[in-house]
Length: 464
Image 1 (cartoon, rainbow, N blue to C red):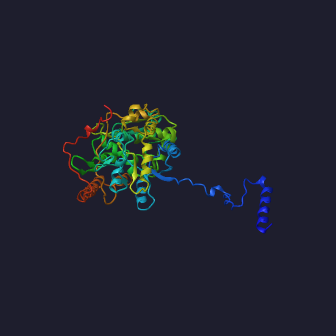
Image 2 (cartoon, rainbow, N blue to C red; image 1 turned 135 degrees about the horizontal axis):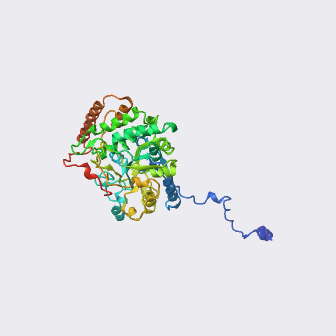
Image 3 (tube, rainbow, N blue to C red; image 1 turned 45 degrees about the horizontal axis):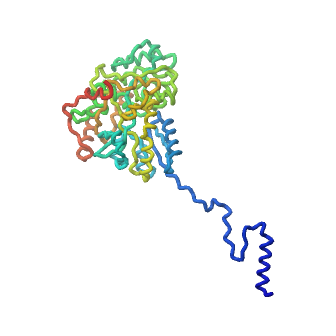
C-alpha cells in the first residue's frame, strides 16, 4: 500500500473516531469558523437623529415633556428631541446661539419675537411642508406667522392679559372689587399692604429682573385698553409716541414709593414671583392666561385667587386688551435636519396634542378645529381669562434697532431713581423715531399712517 493510500485511510479512521462530536468531515478544506462574538458582525442600528427644541415657556414644561417623550418612543424615523427650557434670557440665548455653531433645530416663537427672528434670518419657511388641510386649519396671519408671503409658524394658542389678585387678601383688606383705574390700583395696593403687614404681604409686584418682561405683561396692556399702542407705536401717525405711558409709569412709581410693592421686586424673576403669590405674599400682579396652569401644577396656590380685566388709565375703554398669539413652533434656518424637525412639529400640531393643551389650561386655543371639539378648560381660575368683549388683536408695530437704552429700561430706571419723566419720554420718542426712519430708509420695513385707525374697533374680536 503506497503512502497516499495510507494517509487517506488514516484520515478516514480519524473522522470515524470523532463522528459523535462533528457534524461533518471530509477531505475538502473546512469552512472558516464563525466569529466567537456575533456582536462584532451584527448590523448596528442606525444612529438617532437628535434635535433640540428651545423654549422660554415654563408653565407648560411638564406637559410638553410628556408629549416629547411620546414622540421619542413612537416615531418611526429614529428621531429624538431634547427640550431645552430657557429663562428670561431666551432672546439673548438665541442671538448667541446663532453666532456659534450651537443653534437649536426648533425654536419657540412669540408675537414679540417672531418678527425680529425673521429679520435676523433665524427662521426657515415651512410652506413646502404644509398640506392642504393644514393651510385651511392654520391660516396665514400677516406679521404674526407669515412674512412676505411665506409661512414660518402655525398658531396653537392665544393668551389674554389679566390682573391676577389674591382674593383672601382683598377680603382681609375689605376690598370688594379689583381696581378699574390707575388711581384705584395705587390705593388698592396701599390698602392690601396695610392689611398684609402681619404676614409680610404686599399689594403689588411684577418681575422686574427683566423690565421688558415685567412692563410687557402690565404697562403694555394698560396702555392698550386705554387706546395707546402697547409698544409705544402710534398706528394713526406711523410714529413712536410714548406719552401715553406717562400716567401708567407714574402710578407704578407711586406704588413703589408708597412701600406697596414686594421688597426686592427689582431682582424678581417671574417664577419666584409666582411662588410668592402662591404663598399669599403678593396682592396683585398682571400676566398671561398661562397662570391657571402654573397654580395647578407648578406652584399649587395656598390662597384663593382670581383674575379680572386690567385697569385702564381712567376707567374708560378706548382700545383693546391684546389677545396675543398666532405662532408657536418654527424651524431654525441653521438646522441641518429640517425635514426631521418638521416631522416633530407636525406631531406637535396634531389635535391630540393641541386639544389637551387647551383643556389643561396652558393657553386658550386659536385653532377653530380644536375649539369646536375641546371641553371648557377644567382648571381653577381659567374663567377670568376666557375672551371677553375687550379682547382683540392689535396690528404688529415695526421692530426697530434703537440706539441707547430701551424704553422699558428707561421707564424702570425712572421708577427706581425718579427724574423728569417728560424728558425721558422726549428722549425715547426722538431715538425711536430716528431708528424708525433708518429702518425705512434701509428697506427693513415700510410704514404709513392709518388716518382712520380706531383702537376701540379692535375689541370684541373673540367675544361680544
